[in-house]
Image (tube, rainbow, N blue to C red; front, side, top):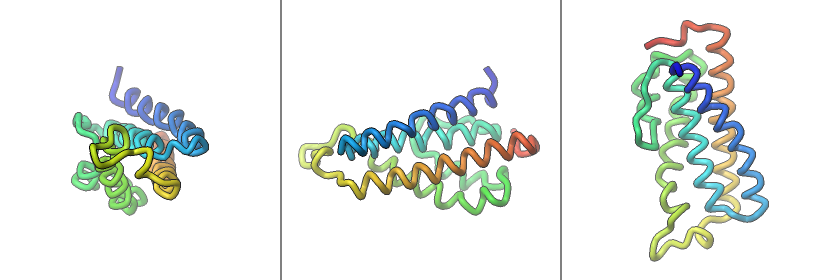
Length: 146
């Protein structure tokens, strides 16, 4: 399997998983929306990195790699990198708490509908950006460097 195939596989998985967020929101499972949103963002951004020839690390927040390698991306994408990195960082910070909680942090009580809706909006921004990126790479393979 090549990096390009794996990169696009990540994006396909992220796109399919996005549909889950609406179900979780409807079920008022707000902490699960946060956790799933983080994983969708992680898959999307790691797919983008792979597409330009960067092997993504095993950690969850890859926003800094986008920032460090901004020259590998088209201009329109570079203008979104700070927001993409911020979304990745924020959701990464919530990853464990939203799933496991802590002795003084019960996820099902702490996360509210506004938290979940923001996570969905941010995830949609990441997916829309990834979709545009993969479409632009298809049209202009010169973005693939590595």
